[in-house]
Image (tube, rainbow, N blue to C red; front, side, top):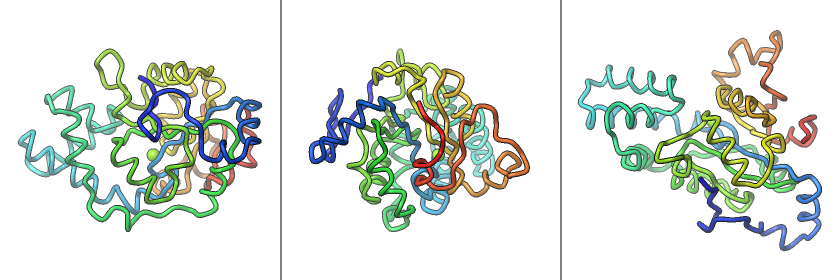
Length: 258
Ligand SMILES: [Mg+2]
């Protein structure tokens, strides 16, 4: 698995602002850190724009291709999402579903671009975070690129690692697979301890921390998650979370250093 860059190449890309501002490259070398950003409910409000249509689309796919009634299909979708972290993995393993077909069919999401929204200052902060920046998402590449372009963020990252790239030895290995995360760090030529995963899903952070990555829990968009006991100020953060933020712009101030 190697990260693919915005233009589809493999290898180390050069960001536009690196070329325009050589001091940015100096910062990159000095800090040597790699930011791994989840996409949905980390960089934009997917609960508002995506999930309301994505879940029914997946249920409908299971009805049509697995042959279940709608209520059973919905329950199976939820079961696989909880068990594997992504519904697709359960359908591939237990029902012989073609992963590419499933992802393409369920992520059509007509009118998606008009519903997308993110915090404006967050975009500005991303632009100046020192170090390399990658998107690491369990969503398919085509969908991720639509979101990044619509939100004006496609030029802010050194590369995109989508679920299309998360496979090893012929098997899909999406987040939270620890072997995939370790392999990704190796592909980026950086120790896991120099990587910072910014993410709204705790299971993914637990896995990343287990291999030595730093973790930042983004709770600003995942409102339901933010109402859980873990997110309450009355309860401590899980031990595997290094820092918690509500806005990406808080990354400037928190003490997550590598
Ligand atoms: Mg997410």
